[in-house]
Length: 86
Image (tube, rainbow, N blue to C red; front, side, top):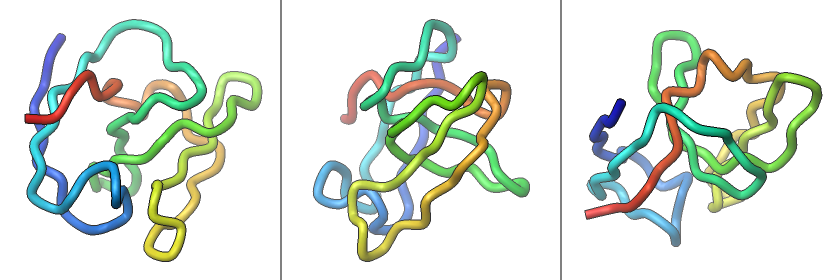
């Protein structure tokens, strides 16, 4: 139901710095603007939900110079939404 992750990288600057810890809630609806942790090619990533297309999401980091946009991410790949950092 709840998970904790440590952010690595600069794709979510200035919202989160590398090394920040986040608390993630697995259940509930994902909304545009939520920050989510998801799995892609065996890696866990953190990005912002920017657009929903059908049952899939377009996700992007806040640091546009350092981030890759991920299209067509299935809801099942999303581990949950970030509730807070600590």
